[in-house]
Image (cartoon, rainbow, N blue to C red; front, side, top):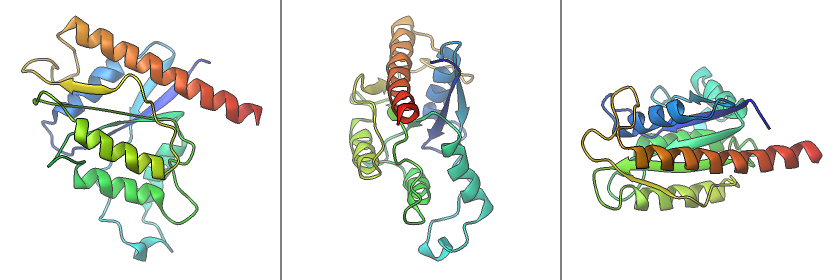
Length: 189
């Protein structure tokens, strides 16, 4: 399959986020037949069931952005051994109203970077549990625990280490295989 569009969600709203740099690196390294586009989360209000009867436009746009892509990569930092609250809030918006879950059947991948040796392993495990509940087919291998050493990613997403760049390319290739499998199955159905 060609011409796939992959959305990415950066689980940090920090202007200096190393995870945003990782997301930009993925976009730069994507093969020619894939385009990565950001699905922003910073303007979503705190979710409340009070909104279920009348979603604000920013939440409708967020859900539509997920619907418009072939798959979603969630690039998450790790805050206190879990995902950031802003990311959990976005996921709550995606799951509501009842019966209109955005990630149901949507191929999804999880990756993240931090300065620590285990990178974002604990956050990713929490995130994968949430995505499992949402019925999102999630990339299992390779796992994307990237230790961000100083200078690994430039501000515009250039990767300065060729081994890391090669890994990120193979990660994207594996995710495209997952996307193609689900897109093919949905077309055949």
